[in-house]
Amino acid sequence: MHLHLRDGDMCRLTTPLSAEYFSGAVIMPNLVPPVTEFDSMDAYRTRILEAAGAHAESFTPLMTLFFKNQTRATLEAARARESFFALKLYPAGATTNSDGGVTDFGEAEATFRAMEDLGIPLLVHGESHGFVMDREAEFLPTYRRLAQTFPRLKICMEHITTAAALSLLDEFENVFATVTLQHLLITLDDVAGGMLRPHLFCKPIAKRPEDRSALLAAALSGHPKLMFGSDSAPHPRHKKECCGCAAGVFTAPVALPALADLFAKNNALDKLQDFVGGNARRIYGLKTAPKKVVLEDKPCPVPAVYEGYGEHVVPMFAGENLAWSVVA
Ligand code: NCD
Ligand code: ZN
Image 1 (cartoon, rainbow, N blue to C red):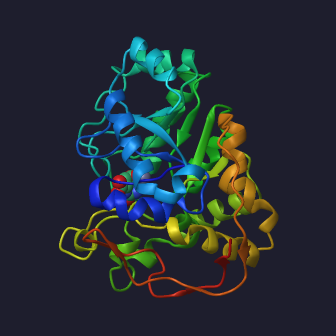
Image 2 (cartoon, helix red, strand yellow):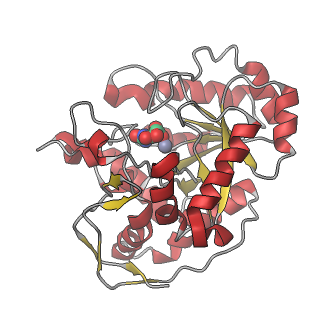
Image 3 (cartoon, rainbow, N blue to C red):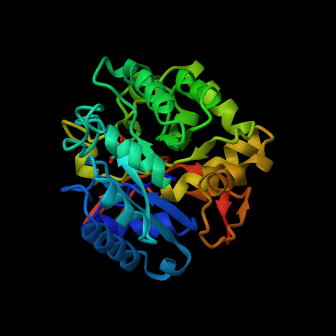
């Protein structure tokens, strides 16, 4: 429910790797320049389906527009397009390619109101500009204000990383969340506690053990408002292994086996399907065609790097063996 497919050669390389095991994904609009117009959205969707190749038939890109205080008329037109799914709001400068994001939430109110009336979901990258460990916590009052002011607006906290954010799901009927694979598995210690691991660096940054435990417990217990949002965010290797590492972890090709392993180890395999798809289908009323994926507890080697079209991308678990495989 939260996927970055990039553009150009990166899109050609990472889209098939991302589309293979999923029947659909919510496609993030943070390209350069961001996807703000229908025409660029539709053109991007076409490029994604071309890049998906043989997987295009069984993969639905759910397209988003970058939040830009869109007018009611624009949103009405958006809703009429079958490919359009939601608006994605980035606070200005909060993460990769978000410079054109929101600086004044007051000015955005008319758009929120129109989205609420039209039933358009609001997907939010919820980080403030404070101290890096506190950015999500500092954004929670904004979520609260939005949830209270627009009670019919479906608000999705995109990839939450803290126990505090999780508690908003129980506080507000209209608040939902996605969580990534890495935030169920790692803490800040894994990113920067020893040798710095650039391929685990993403925003929001991984937090404390108690945050990871709370998120994992919610996922394993089948929390009905928590959806898998991979946030698979590939960057070229030279932009990760350098001075000034880009934020984002490439997880799409390893996500399902890694989740199967995690859920199996915790005797929660029966909760996996709703976590990766069922909850989202119910919450958003999605009608994407079902796709059968068979997972088996059989080791699967992860490539050290994926390469093609002149690009190199390093996935999570690069060079390691996963305990589970996708076998069909
Ligand atoms: C994402 C990216 O690379 O586009 N990076 C990340 O660390 N998660 C942007 C985002 O979703 O925040
Ligand atoms: Zn993301």
